[in-house]
Length: 234
Ligand SMILES: [Zn+2]
Image (tube, rainbow, N blue to C red; front, top):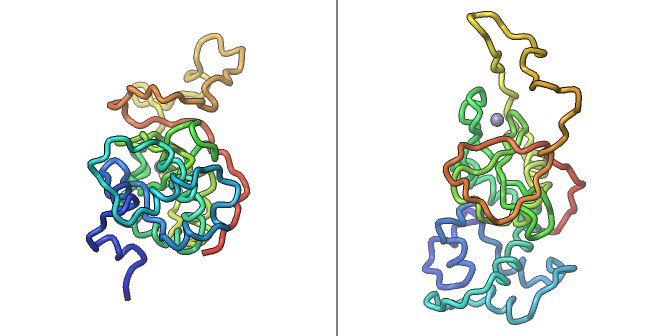
């Protein structure tokens, strides 16, 4: 039996082979040519024929320095649709089990493997985040956060566990309890000063591409929007 991603082992000179093989694109899986060629899967996407031709190019000249962002965007938006399909979920399961998406940085999540997620389904809003299915929070990936979150979309992790419920982990058993000289601190002692105004800032993040925080340990970024999954054929 061959795995859905087994074609990666062939010598691959295509644009997709170049893009997927790029080390910084480790989160991205290979979308089968047949899925991209199926016009139904491109419904509603705006793109130029030339851009599609480059993405489908079987022998892409890697020395070309002009590679535009259009191909990445087109491939990314198709990728977001593909990983919501049964075969796409299976491809992403292999990557999840290999730990390609990293793990939750929370101590009590004990290295729980994470899945990529977008905070928006629209291109250019924010870079990809990782979702921990144990504590159900989202974080910046420790490495390579440059990919657009729309390549994965807001629904992907939830579709993943809907398709593969047996993989859903337990929530963390323990929780950090702040203590002072051994005594557990009351919640009120942990509130910021003058907390009369409810702080709603930094609830959601509208992020520009100025991410210079390469070394910041992963941090939580507000709640994850859930939108109804749109379905696509295999
Ligand atoms: Zn976690």
